Image (cartoon, rainbow, N blue to C red; front, side, top):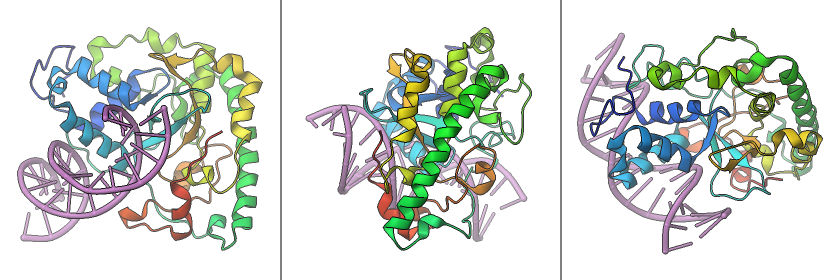
Length: 291
DNA sequence: TTCTGTTTACAGTGCG
DNA sequence: CGCACTGTAAACAGAA
């Protein structure tokens, strides 16, 4: 695998897919999430090839973000203005490039199968709302729990991997920029992560499925920020503020969910356009209300 | 208006 | 050869 330095590829197209490039950008920041504009900047700064024809490749990149299950969308806090959401990597997407090729994955990462039990499939809005409220309550506890754990377990700063399949502290995500652009990576930026960042990392990877944003009023998660607001304030990347509520763009499979404390395990399906219909939830998708 | 995000469609390519 | 993955274009909606 080539490991490009800053100018390795000059104006030539780098041997990376948009998925790889996006993953690099996301992994390059301590919070492991970036807004779209920052992903653009990262790619353009590092690969001069992408300083031209921006409309073309940025459209492709956006398509990849939406289309590929390995990317998840994380909503901004409502009191932190800005366009668009943050994007992060799905916790289970880490082995997509195990074949060593960053141009073509060995297999496309895809969110898994539909569970048989789905309270949200209930016919009545009341049932769904009630269930969602229960899940919100769980997540509220989860946020606190996660932060507390992060404070005591620095290795949790790697966020995604702190669950059912624990990784050693030296674990490096296959997407990690230190694995791809080794010459530019400064390990101290990781080992020197502050507790604050650990908190953020732990919290930011506590998932909540997108459809939960819609059917019922959601305030518990955001209101919990007040409990440790000092930790969250001033955390930003390139002037971007901390996102508020992790909102997976696609529902997670049970296998992925089980390792995430407090995460509801009922979520099913993927967007209907991908042939995995979720009729009763489809109407909930487009009306995300973030508090 | 611009940017962001979603979706569909289709062509090219690599792999088994 | 068929399938899966990737890249590109385009239409469209919604938010800032």
